[in-house]
Image (cartoon, rainbow, N blue to C red; front, side, top):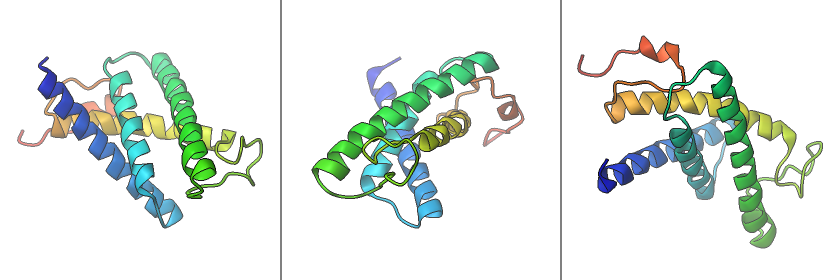
Length: 151
């Protein structure tokens, strides 16, 4: 695969993830921050990479676990820089049980786990509708019934 095509593929996935996560934040919190879009785009690129093969449901579960851990780690790193060091106060989980520095907590790790599954379905849609790929990864049988544009 040519390097420029791969770059444009990941840029497309990044933009879709950034936009989608921004919409999720606005619909649930009523606001967002541009850095959350950047984290959402990066997380979507991770999901896109993990979603390259159509493995069974047990492997999908492991991919979702792995992505939840990676997203939680990215959230901790971003939180320590943006919220603690720079004082932007974008989010604060200090009232959540078992939080770490008010930046991460198990409840949101479970949310990232769930959103990872949804994100992999979203990635399958991106592959089919935007990137025009016919193969649908991640064992997403529901996507087999989704018609492609122009067919």
